[in-house]
Image (cartoon, rainbow, N blue to C red):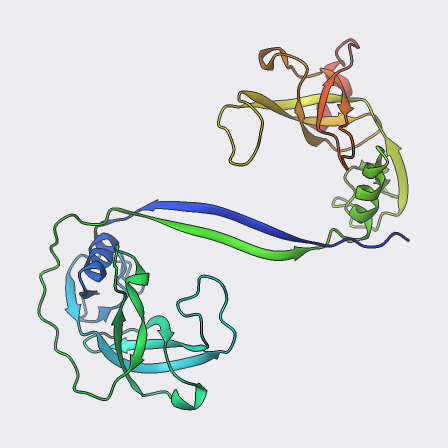
Length: 313
């Protein structure tokens, strides 16, 4: 049995979103060192504010200022901060009910150790030196033993309001393809495409999944397919991807390798993008030392008849 592979994988992208009037005012307020909540029809004040009452679904628009001081309602100690967390030294995650609010805000508490944190302790906001209109304008909370601050009654109107935010979304994890796909990847290193056949429906899955998703039974019989295949459908890519050295436009297609019961995807080259078509017969092109095909190109064979691949669309 081949070694089951594993490798670190990072999925990262900037997430851009526009803000409605409530969130826009809340984040703009943080930029100006003002914490705002939203008042519900029954008089509760929600912090952070939301646009609709979570109980009645009523639209909420009345913003009210709350104090930057509050009370810890619950907490958990973070002994090993990760990248991009609020503090780079151990800290507590806390839910803080700010004075004047009826709900709690999640943030970090800068404390010397877990023995210094307790439910019911008083804290206050530590503002970031530079503020841009984001939740990170609250650098963290810190212990506080003074009098409760009184809200200033800010009307919630600001010049140059924040209308959108960009958040960096990132996921770091270790990916293991499992037994079936490990064997598939090892075969690719030898420039072979190997799938697995379902013992019940006899469909050959490439890449293999270790089990038939239709019949729900394990697959162990290995079957070599291709190398030629048929374009079943495709799209023309007109937006250049970051860190991908391919000029646009180019074509990405679903390709049914000969003998496979499932189409895989690959880039089509060696032909003008506007001449790629369903039924086009293609073959893989490998580059020196590569573990997978760089792209697929036309074989020069006549196009496949639609009936031979229609069930693989």
